[in-house]
Length: 205
Image (cartoon, rainbow, N blue to C red):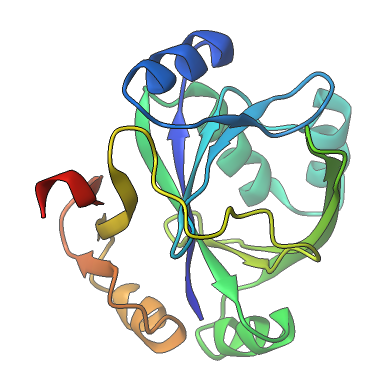
């Protein structure tokens, strides 16, 4: 399992896309119509998701509460209200999400599984599965896309080729779970708050 992507909260998606484009990143809206997010892909390693709001309606949140998934609703509300910047990571599962669920159960942590899809600007129908631990201090998990949307051998106009390191702050009681599930040298788990991200810039080599 590896680090799949890092979520970056924005107040206004169009403004954020413009801002990151002006910084020399190629930014792609997540969906062809009515996008709620945008992506900064790299040829290898994790990507960045710019997100203005989670794509979940108030009615869906109401239903989630009814079926006992209040913790998931709290996570989604946090996504909506948190400050701008890096705020969440997603771990990408190499095989099946059932393995993640099994490990979480060993720590008495329940989870919620679902699936999603979207049509991206290139008319690709991307599909994936998700698993949300009902412990909101843990990251969430995602299967690989059915189609790899990443560009091949690509360097952004600013010279950045990929993410170098992501420092991820988490409670020390939960870090053993992350260290057991994720073996990715890009991810550095630390016992302090916050998430930070550094890059490989080919222009500086």
